[in-house]
Length: 101
Image 1: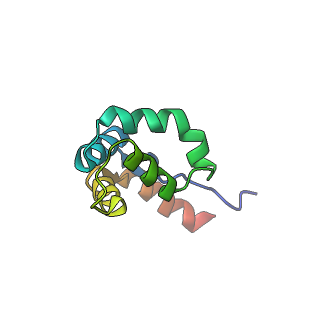
Image 2 (image 1 turned 90 degrees about the vertical axis):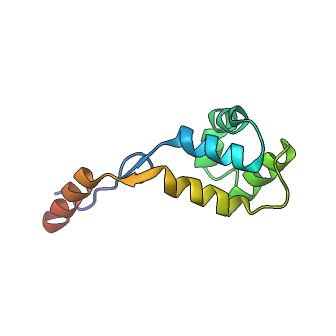
Image 3 (image 1 turned 45 degrees about the vertical axis):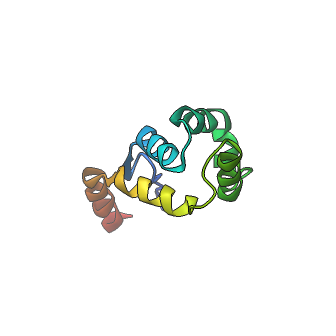
């Protein structure tokens, strides 16, 4: 008997354009998009496992030449909100599954 189903959010429940998030974030903090894109390619496992915190990411981007007078968290959240949408089709499936599981 199935008791639990787990769905990932980024790219599953939410359709996420990560390249647009990385690029928009980079341009707004004043660095090349390739820096952010390559950072995530190289360090994704460490990010997902929690070995690299958001604070460390912000600091690494400042060390790469990013602006120091803005809130990286605000910029990141704004870009994520602009480049993410709910996967309504999958969400309706989840709602139906909740009735049964």
